[in-house]
Image (cartoon, rainbow, N blue to C red; front, side, top):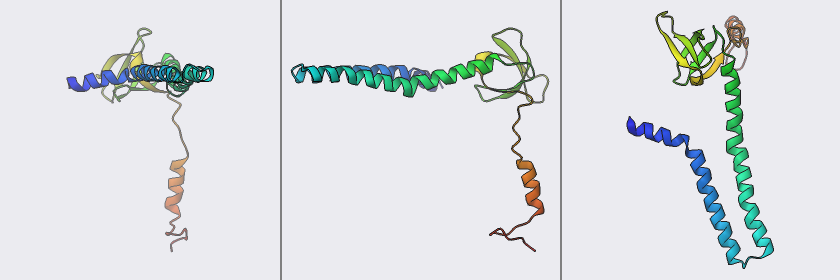
Amino acid sequence: MLFVNKIMHKAVFLNKEFLEVIMHMVLTASTDVAAAEGAGAIGSLISLLLPLGILVLMYFIMIRPEQKRQKQLDAIVSAIEVGDAVVTSGGFYGVVIDIPDDKVIIVEFGNNKNCRIPMKRNHIVEVEKPGQAVDDGKSSEKEDSKDDKKGLFGKKKD
């Protein structure tokens, strides 16, 4: 179990380390190319713009979407109210029954009224308001399909 925890801890910092390694490789390769060309003006310009372009691309592919998701999650978690259904980072479903302060909430899990656990707000990954349940009308379609029995090619059965 300790081995798995170490791997998971390293996976969190993988993006940062990955960026540092790639940046080092690109900068080293670009300076070697510039030195091999005899430090021509166009070669130096390309060797400077290539790493910068890669860093900008990596920012827009890796870092910016994660920052947007984090801001959305922070906004959702800050709007938690008593009675909201939540999902924890461990995958447990519960209902918020009390908010003693701005960092801790008390969540009730299951139908047992004795299973109330204080949790930190940052361990909540999803929030659903009581009236927010999505109804796609699928239940009425299922009832209609039971009345109209159709065959394989859409024709009514007798």
